[in-house]
Length: 175
Image 1 (cartoon, rainbow, N blue to C red):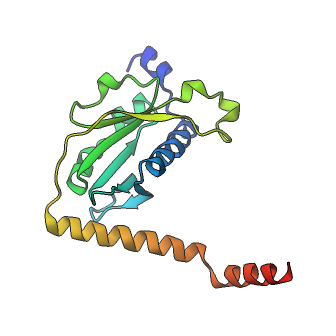
Image 2 (image 1 turned 90 degrees about the horizontal axis):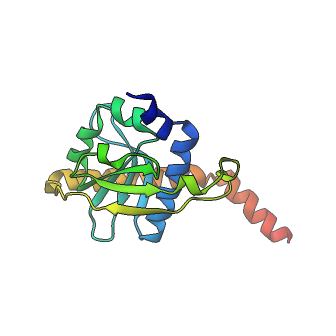
């Protein structure tokens, strides 16, 4: 990789987090239900973001924090087998011509947000290109929808610990 390409998009963890926050905001705006770090039935595979769309399709969004991150990732091809659509989410400095023609592109405007404000401002993002549609077989769709529901419910249960719920109720009564 040339020095020029690595300078364009360094691939820092902060970049990955900022892209993820923007992508989740886009999912909310588009009425897509999204789960971070969604474990796939394939051994050792985890989608950065899996979204359930209003038409009941499943969309995988793979976040790439830089050129090196994209070039060294050898597993993203497998995500096509576990979703109807596949997007790459990248920052607005990423050279999108490096991405395959049949994947969607979500671009996040990180260059418009100073690094010092990235914790408090969610950058804008937009879908630049829609992905090719690869319809899931019905049995795989059922498996994934069940897994999506169980993952979402499990994560909600862990947030709704009974001790926390009881403390909140007691605090409300005291008011």
